[in-house]
Image 1 (cartoon, rainbow, N blue to C red):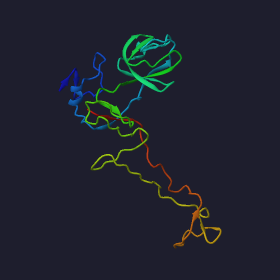
Image 2: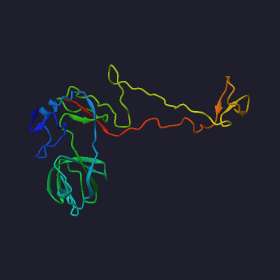
Image 3: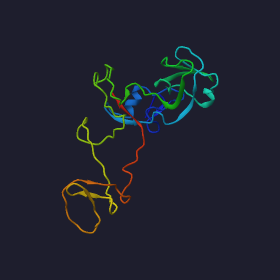
Image 4: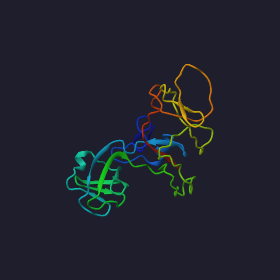
Length: 227
């Protein structure tokens, strides 16, 4: 199936066509990302260039020392202002030293980074807890889930719940490092072969046996289709 110059079988929803344009809304529907779906997005996966703006003009990024065309900067790529943590996207590559931007976020002296990932197409938002202000969305007026602060997602029969699981791997204590309180002092546990139970508080450090990494994860930005 092909819509707006894209092949459903070979391209993702945010793939640029030969004109450097993002797919239209019909294509997004064609790849069957349902409304309400939450998916990971590698927003800052690959940095194309960075630098410091040395000129000021409305909705422009100017750096006389950069080579935007040579570096492979394209229309629709994300631009971050790392000085004030604002962001926008490129609407046109004017020249080697100037970009047109969708928003006016740069003045001379501010630092920038340009990423290869295209900006989110219409109908998608980041899951940062912000209010959905798009009146065409069935979620209008609601807050997106705030997932981009390190939360994990788990499966269930409904959405919106939260879960906290404490994690402590199986481990041992070195002989003499684990202590139990008798009356008013702590005594070392010296016989590790004798079973039994005691009542009271314990203190001490965990030995090396049994320790390990709980999990390793790759960081991405959670996004949601809202219409």
